[in-house]
Length: 439
Image 1 (tube, rainbow, N blue to C red):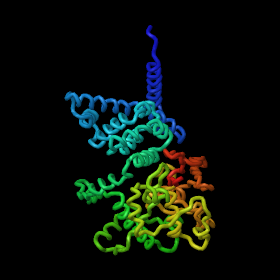
Image 2: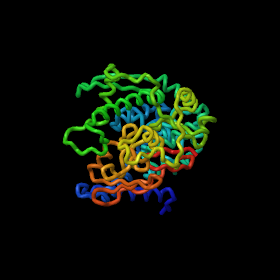
Image 3: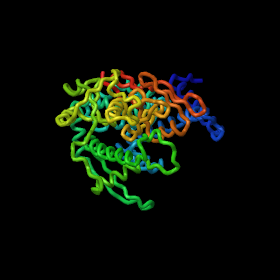
């Protein structure tokens, strides 16, 4: 009998694990699972999913090789037809294969279940458009990126890849921004089934930040005027009536702004940009922070231009917050407190939530009606869904020094405690949803 080589043994172990996962899934009554059982189910499902995703990746690579020889259509067409995928999904799969070809180690990590297709999509998006020199510099970080992907959420890894791509680009992102400006467009259509009118705008980061700022300011104004008294949204009792969602208010605000029913503030729109002083003065470095309030990256040159007519407010992390503490004198978070929170959070503070800070509500961790104070250390942004979970759903959220979050389920079990490690190439570790401060 021919002895098995190491690779054969590894393959055999993977096949055994795969078969065991499939058998276990087939025998599982998901309807009878509790919360912990569902984690086990998802772990087994991830094993199977990773194997099939790796097969798709290998098919895309072989299609590309055959197409180069004139023996096949392109990978996108083959995956769309034979795999019965949408054109968009087929293009994404082909892009993943191309990214794995340029950055080694990720295909094996995918097959082993250590990373997901979401991580590969982040890799593909970050490397798209890089010139040969920048792509080679990016690929030199392959091992470090793979280790990050194995321990980071897709959202966090996406930012890590974007930051690295910007650092290895010699122009600090100026040419990318110019390409984005040339790609600005608006599309309009009517859905034949629902009859709903669609207005889709694709804007470069600077234009998008200005448009979002105007819409969000109008939404906050409209929602504040809709309140029956001076109580904050997070402290209102359920009234039994339908409460308009943020998206619904945003749609109403956009229509009013476009039609002139709501006057638009003609001053320069307030666009929050977060940048460390070293990047502002000298350009990008390994620990650079240069982005809009929602985490969209901007070239330092663009920020310098914006600074010509901007109000610049330094934010000191881990410093005293006396000027930002309102105590019991004011119930709602002040504009200054929102700015301070925005400097720390890109999104809702709930771990894993990707809803932007601007679309979140400022929550009193110790509720106002329970003698909570409107102090910065007692405030955190929560999206509408998670805000309702805390106030009406029975979930308990506590905030410890350093903004360490503890979440407790309604049944009393701990759902989350501590911080999620968001490792960046610079080595910083911000908590979930938190903004990485420059070193």
